[in-house]
Each structure stands twice: as structure tokens, then as C-alpha cells.
Image (cartoon, rainbow, N blue to C red; front, side, top):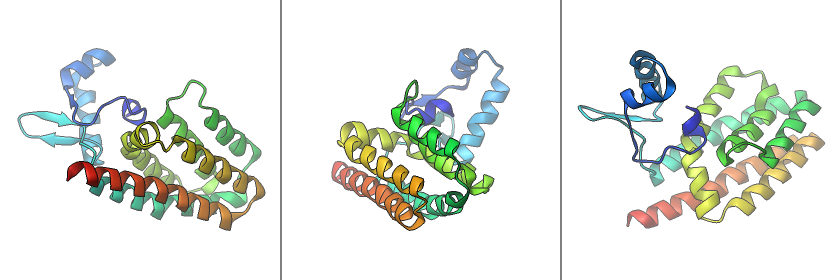
Length: 194
């Protein structure tokens, strides 16, 4: 799952159970179980007699993933803000510096630090799954569609609103952040498809 979160596995890549077991130094059984779980979460796709593949990027999937994030993440943020600690805020700030983390790992570390105090463990787990699902989209948005500068500024503004304890502003900034990425991605992917 960490390779998916880092955006290291290209969409359309086939994942071979034997190769993964060899790389990880484990038997095929835990690899098969892990792949089945990832298929069950919709992060990978199983094709009969062919194996497991990382799904191609699509406008419909981007729209779904960002809609789900908009449904969960603002609630996590609103619940977390009254309890957020200086440690949470410091970890969010460190994630923005991304030392030793990939772009997508740093993105999740930032958001996780802001949501962790929500007390909703299941919601946090769902948000993590969605961050894994959007990892290749985040790479596309920031590195190829020029969204890095906007994303960095939005993260900084969101962190500042969280420092002030301004729940209304933080929620609005988070929703705007998600909407900007979704609109750019869906527009690009629809144009590519036509």
C-alpha cells in the first residue's frame, strides 16, 4: 500500500504475486491476501486469468474520489479543531516541508495531522484509503498540471486557519482545496479521453 500512496505504481501496471513475494521476501499467501484487500477497497482491479492491475486514471474516478473526500474530510477537520494540539499543528507544518517523504506521502501526513484529533478512527481510516486512491491524481495535478503552487498555498492557508482555531474558514479552505484539484483533474481527463 505504501508504494500506491507514494504514487510509485503507474496506472495500468500489472502486479504479479510471485514478483511481489520475491521483492518482499515473503510467501505468496500474504501477498495474495493483501492484493485481495486492495481489490476489495477499489484501489486495484482483478481481471480473470490475467491478475491484478492498477486502474487507469479516469474523470469519473477522480470525481468520485474527491466527492467522497469532501464528504468525510471536512467533518474530520471540524471535529478535530477543538482538540487539535500544538504537536498536531507542528506535524502538519513538517509535512509541508516534505523532508524524506514523497509528494503524496507528505500530502497524507499533512491532512492526517489535522484530522487525527477528531476521535473518528474509522473516518480517519477511510480518509487514508481515499488518499491512496487519489495519489496518482495528486501527482498528475501537482507535477503535470501545474497545481503544486496552488496546492502549497492552499495547505499553508488551511494550516493558518487551524492555528487560529477558525473552523469556518478552515472548512471553507479545505473544500476549496479539494474542489480546485477535482475541477482541474476532471477537466483534463475528460479532454484527454475525447
